[in-house]
Amino acid sequence: LSIQANSPPSLSSLQLPSINNGQSADYISKFAKEFTVTDIMGVGGGGCVFKAVNVHDEHTYAVKRIVVDPKDVKDGKLHKTLREVRAMAKLDHQHIIRYNSTWIEE
Image (cartoon, rainbow, N blue to C red; front, top):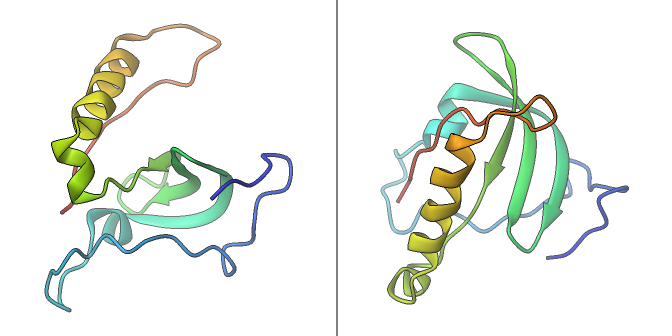
């Protein structure tokens, strides 16, 4: 899915792949439980960035959701993604958005 950054889709029109992966119908993701999505900041081949408010601390965050297909884990895509996460965690610059945390949902 490739959409120009200057015209992101509406929340209601965006369809992302499910991350349920066979979980029971009672499964609710951490993202769904802990964040309220207020906007879509961008969508691209690497995922979707949401503007979301954390229900606990009431701060606004940019949350990047990357869906990794189970077959891609075997191909090393998850390892590459985690390597990028570790690099972002080390960055500390006034002109770069500060990295906060990562979690993996299956």
